[in-house]
Amino acid sequence: MSDDWLDEIEPRLNKSYIYNTFKEKCGNDPAGDHAKALVKDAVGYAYQRSKTIIR
Image 1 (cartoon, rainbow, N blue to C red):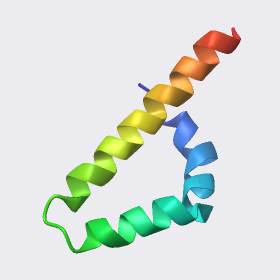
Image 2 (cartoon, one colour; image 1 turned 90 degrees about the vertical axis):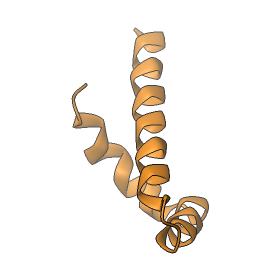
Image 3 (cartoon, helix red, strand yellow; image 1 turned 60 degrees about the vertical axis):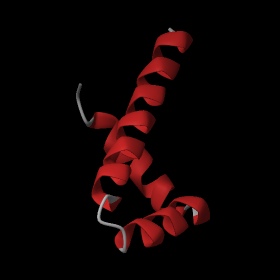
Image 4 (cartoon, rainbow, N blue to C red; image 1 turned 135 degrees about the vertical axis):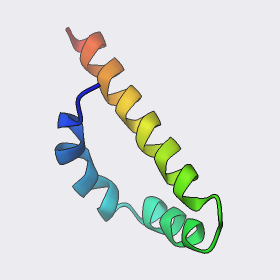
């Protein structure tokens, strides 16, 4: 899957209070990097699905 969506979505995620709180809590957790990767995968999947539905 291409990461073209990341340039569009990442600035929005970084403005999100919920996402920023999540990143803070993951920073102290040994599995935090894995959790952040799962969120990015889920967002990428949702983005691709929404493009499919719109088409």
